[in-house]
Length: 406
Ligand code: AMP
Ligand code: GLY
Image (cartoon, rainbow, N blue to C red; front, top):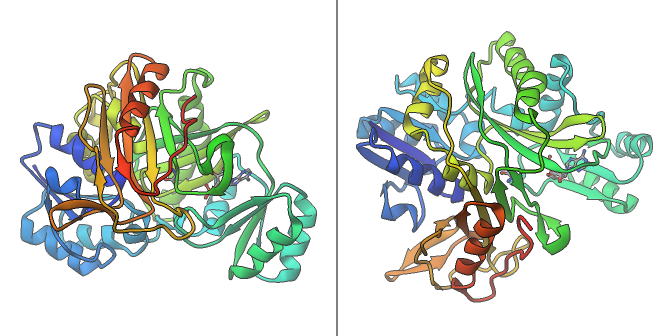
């Protein structure tokens, strides 16, 4: 099978690593990729949000399957263009991807499908925002309606800051604060059938103790030994199946992965957000544990044959990912610094995110530069193995959280 992966982050490196390990995959391509992916796949320098370029590359390569990683190409309609050229594609089309592309649309779908989520108001004026802030009270949750690379959400007790964020965005969703631990659940979907992957937890704030600004994610681990029994089944029943059915009813069959961000509240799991793609860095740990060869599963989603697949199998034990971020991330990350100490150890390895090759050396090229994945029979050993390798990575000015999976 010839597979083309679209994207250039840590999630795409994790996808490529698992695809490379699948004996069914004869050729692996990635566009545009990064320095780590270059070691296992052939890179192609195209604009990932340009539907014609992606579909054209897939045709030229004779790809059997295209896997679209990030939200921007999905929302731009890249998966539609690939499918229109007759090539199976893993990833929702433009309209279904609006489940991530518009918070207001996601809320509308959840309401129509009876999915448990925070009560909310969509606001376009200062007056509407003020009324919604008063209705729900502190802590205030204000979300930019559109895509914002994980930085569109402000959660604060400061009324002025909440209002300022609302005014800075064209349209916002203001909602009730959900209290409780957060869980990420990925559901693989083929338009009709949906299957859950093993739940993971992500650490969104930049600094230890959940301090500092929201980021795309600073670390993750799986499995969750503390999670209630039957959580995945409950979320499939109460969230994923109703959502996918509602989308199909509207003529938007969902094909790809539906990322459900949940808060486990005292009144049960409630949806914090939907994404139309795999989460980053949760994918790095979930795919590490997934034993079932990945290409066949993604192909089954792309071709509507998920119901015929055997149940997914996982490796025992735990995986922990720790993100190493560039100086000044998330505000204005410094790029172009040399990175060393990337060699794997017996139980840990590096997945690249914002990296590039310059004059034969690996340099930083993004905010989240890489993730170290450590594995072990239990969470503590996986964590120790991850941090041991994090300690060997050298990147001037970089920072990471020391409390991932503690
Ligand atoms: P989102 O982009 O919607 O995932 O929001 C980013 C982060 O903001 C989430 O992972 C939560 O930590 C936090 N957040 C979002 N919505 C809420 C909410 N209703 N209550 C509490 N925290 C929230
Ligand atoms: N880790 C959170 C996200 O991918 O949105």
